Image 1 (cartoon, rainbow, N blue to C red):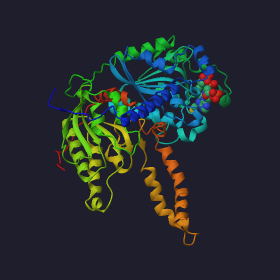
Image 2 (image 1 turned 60 degrees about the horizontal axis):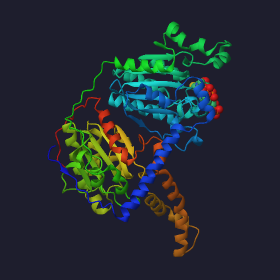
Image 3 (image 1 turned 180 degrees about the vertical axis):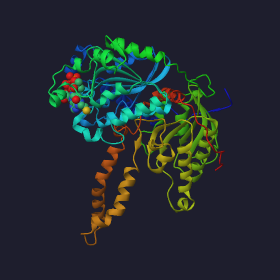
Image 4 (image 1 turned 90 degrees about the horizontal axis):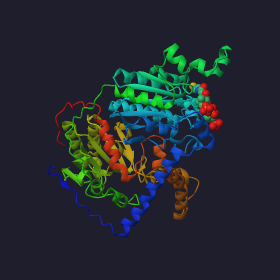
Length: 542
Ligand code: COA
């Protein structure tokens, strides 16, 4: 048990404020679940019928079939491309996530052929590459369930030529294979052009009779290019590739057999996870995670009490706090989540020099001890003004960025409130490569708040706007100011929305607060597949 103090909640669940927060956040969670459900299942009748006629399972059924019984699946970015491309690319046409096969955590990357033939939109590419990055950083075997028409040709300029575009998929496969991270492909449908390199690059490849095809150019292109007339099956079907070309290794009579073969291959990978951590037995929090709906303020300008949130996420609601009397706008401490030891760095107000230094010190402790870190990000920014700038707050923020960037333990970031400015950097934002970054439906992310941006732009733009008017009255100025600010406020409201963010893969998904503990535990468990390098310095006291 240790001597960690249990957080004593002061939350009163009978106040009108709690009740209105609860109703508001519960509704946000329902909206999230509804949107995820629709992205996963809403397809035209015609598309679904054609798919079934081909004796194919739906993409999520395929994943279900390869996972161990009752194994959870941590799906990443299910709302990628949300509200983009006229709604034509639900989940960006690809499902990615982590699940157990033969008791090994694997990354599954599965095309959804019911979304524009499984073709790659820009967000599809981004999601595929992100899944590969997660796999590479955490040493997860990759399972590719291929059924795709390759690039979405209308947007070729945004998917083909650049460093982080389609070609990177195969580079990643080669690099991971070189690091002994297994790459396994099952070709369950079309695998055309560049896509053909997925099975061609995999360590081991399965192909399904009739449905599976692999070729650099399909029959229509071959006819156009050389005049040769050939059927898809003769050009690159399962028989051709397992008997003549050797591009694939295993012939499967149907999809079920192919998926069973995936499981069989994984069972022979001869890998085991070595866990470097001292674990405890998992224990529920002392306070019900359901109460998080009432902890999160419905008005984002109201503070969110970090202790109340932590008490509903960690084992036994226990937190062994570090420097509790110093730099109190940041909460640091050791805890467990489903038995896994973690260090928590959670905002509880603006960042000051002392809070930044305290966090830097604590991050070093976690690095020294090999304790994974959870950043709970709810930060409007660093404190501004003469006193603080003169006191060197920029160099104290830089210490935090230095510590976050170089600490060698896995970091996971939960964006549970707002995220603005340099606070995003010090608190392990997306640019700092946390192993996972999740957000809550109430979160907001933008360089600064809409109010601050509109105010700043008005300050620098007022003179230009008012130029033509001689001696404007206070009322004229007020009208001009409101007109000037309105579109900026609208833009910031739209772009700081968590759905705008998740659609563009600035995170790995939005989590229902109530499900967050389970998702974090799975994510931390996943990070333990890769060994931790050690830090090279002793601890600098701050
Ligand atoms: N780019 C853009 N749109 C594409 C596409 C591509 N590469 N491939 C398919 N689509 C679209 C189709 O126009 C269709 O759109 P609609 O629903 O609005 O009518 C939808 O995706 C489904 O395609 P469809 O051919 O009806 O489905 P299918 O399941 O019978 O076949 C494919 C899917 C992928 C096998 C087939 O469409 C195909 O061979 N596409 C061309 C693949 C290719 O040559 N790609 C080159 C990539 S570099």
